[in-house]
Image 1: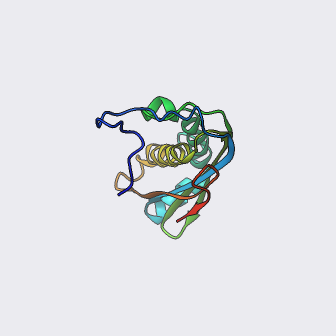
Image 2: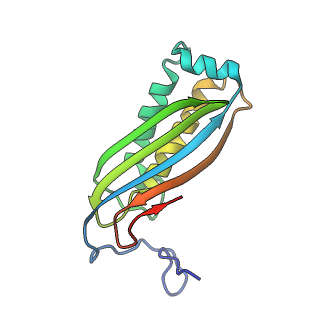
Length: 155
């Protein structure tokens, strides 16, 4: 069984010490999906929502969230993010959210990408809830990461 890095030898939570790790280029990509009716999707794509351009607001919210990850997730290190990009695209029955985050440093940006996607999905829900409260946020997941000792990984 893999050892949990955020637990010390006594089982107490701890921030991982990355002092001796080499700085490398790191990137993570995450995605999530907001399922909604065709009518709500059309509203989201119209740019005519009462709160503004739904996708643009959610994309900015995702970027902001990536930068605040260490303030939200207790054991995450504050990182100097060099790129945070969130894209929201329509698919058959909803909106697909994809976040790509990069840094050069001693620890990865998987949590920043996942946080960006999660907050962008929540923002879509907030922006569209007046039209449909039954939307479903689903399948938030890491799809790839590169860099660091463990190297590349793909879902």
